Image (cartoon, rainbow over the protein chains, first blue to last red):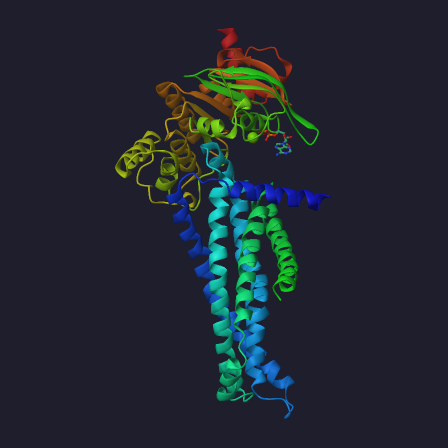
Amino acid sequence: MKSLEQVGKYFELLVRVFSKPERHSIYVRQVFNEIDNLGVNSVGIVTVISIFMGGIMTLQVAYNLQNPLLPIYLIGLGTRDTLILEFSSTILALIMAGKIGSNITSEIGSMKVTEQIDSLEIMGVNSASYLILPKIIAVVLMFPVLYIISVFFGLIGGLIVGPAVGAVTATDYLNGIQYLFNSYYVTYSLIKCLVFGFLISSISAFFGYTVEGGAFDVGTASTRAVVNTNIMILVWDLILTQLLF
Amino acid sequence: MIEVRNIYKSFENKDVLKNISKVFNEGETNLIIGRSGSGKTVLLKSIVGLHEVDQGQILYDGRDFTKMNPKLRKKLRQEMGMVFQGGALFDSLTVEENVRFPLDMFSEMSGVEKQKQVDFCLERVNIRDANKLYPSEISGGMQKRVAIARAIVLNPKYLFCDEPNSGLDPETSLVIDKLVRSITVDLKITTIINTHDMNSVMEIGDNILFISDGEMCWEGNRKEILHSTNQKLQEFVFANKQYQRIRDDKIKE
Ligand SMILES: Nc1ncnc2c1ncn2[C@@H]1O[C@H](COP(=O)(O)OP(=O)(O)O)[C@@H](O)[C@H]1O
Ligand SMILES: [Mg+2]
């Protein structure tokens, strides 16, 4: 019952978020700030995680394929498809729900408990739209970019680690990652990324915007936001996979 | 002038405000006083519409706020300024950007005109050389003053202050009180201030409403307050023995 009420409130908030903004120029400026704050600032961590995961995946695939009957190109192909299909979209989304999501919840939540949101309202500013819309736009735009960065550096990770530990030669790996490439996989994942970007930004904003109390409650809200976002990411992964394949 | 008529407000079956009625005049410092938890903040937030009242009317110079649609409310909001208990400055913006924010949002002024107005308001609250600092880099008293500057930057007709002195030393409190008073008188605005500070009451209490447990208990001004026979008010006022002495001295004279 309580969670149903929450869902209702979430959609109520979204209606306010997407109502007409006060000043377009200010919103545009905010979107660029958020792209910088939420998107560009995540490039580093995405790169590092992807290099490691690409490398580890390449080793895992290589060790599990130590059968002379299986073609060697499967190593590169396996790494590539795992990155493209699930890692750089879904797994990255779960990680980003922790980074970007908790950032959004704690920022908006602290503004709530220190009455900064009331301040906006009393001025006649639609606080939901002013604070949340630029974040949603920024994350939805940036997530596909982060996806592409992740796939790219994941593949690089495999290229570095695979040959370095002698699991696969660079030539075999490079052949593998180009073998039987299906561009629809990328389209499918980019669609997922748009949805995940929306889920991460809107759900975590909702939990921040509805905080009551003080700093402690902001912390609790951040945790709940991450958990709920993660569940919704997996649910939508299931739904979209069913719909798009 | 703001008139509140028979307002009620409850949260989840907890009645916080019970039948409050009061006229708040312009050009005077109107005070809502009472101990912590008596409902001052809820009353102030109900008046400005941050809380929806359950019953009653709130009239801004005759315009009924409770009956307004969101669009009209938004327009009226541009005639209001509010100083929140903690200052509530936007911590991602500098002092100057905070004060300019309402202008950026709502005014058609040019950049130069905006800057002039921002400088004028900061001057009014005696803030100098802090324009480029962030709220976390200035003292609590300065934050409150910047919040006042931001609240008056659009030349409001109505000013609301929720415990403007909380967390400040007595000397700074006095400065803030006098500042709010002079702004109120000079600009002829309707100002409502929440406070539980007897010093403020004696300093700037032109028109006082005392509430206890969400009910109105007493109305009057700072001259009358020491001589009231209202039991609850006496408990509140004379919690600090100093005021008992002041009263007794006055009676002897
Ligand atoms: N959003 C809310 N939900 C439920 N109860 C509230 C809410 N805001 C205030 N209250 C209750 O209303 C009463 C009055 O609070 P408040 O107006 O903040 O007192 P104060 O006079 O100290 O400003 C308190 O008992 C408080 O618990
Ligand atoms: Mg209060």
